[in-house]
Image (cartoon, rainbow, N blue to C red; front, side):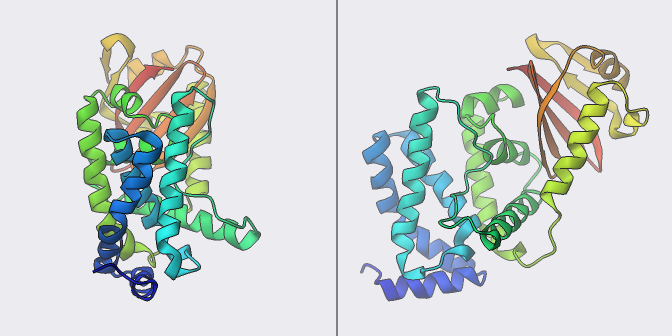
Length: 281
């Protein structure tokens, strides 16, 4: 029996209070309609499925901001439609800036800006609760410009199929984690990014005398073309080259440096970088 608008509103209100079962019920009820929207735009296949999965992930991060709970069906369909259109634009090689798969708010007033930034802090905080294997893939997918499956696979050194399975696992974990951590104290994502940007600029310019404290003694660096080095000394020699910084994405135990010529993926444990993967842009 299909849900009425009243049923939808009741489930959304419960989900906004952190009820995981209600979130599950919402997606179970509306997923077929979401998939139908994606199929109409992208055609049946894995791209449509991925667009729906990413839309569900975005909705998890924004459910508390839904103003009209009875309109959840239209809201979900809008997120799917936007995701599909972004995919089509990306396929046409239009230059885009996708810092996250979160939908834009309807009104971008000061209170919505604060709310949106808080949600981004919330999602990044939740990423820190993911299992280590899936965390880098999720950070790249939702917060970096290297968000396609092929780009993530190349940067992480894993097959595309593994990227898909890890993202699926990340979504499954986040569906459980996000509602439970919404009211916890979150770090300031903007402050962390600024700190990591300053650190990256200093290290790449060779002007960070204490930078060695950030590198684990057993650091492994995977360079382009399969070259691999061990230890911080080899990294310090390499950064004497021209690695002009363009952008930085900072997540829990994962940092992405975008330079003019390459993307760097830094993976940390206990505050120290133990693995770096570098690919040409």
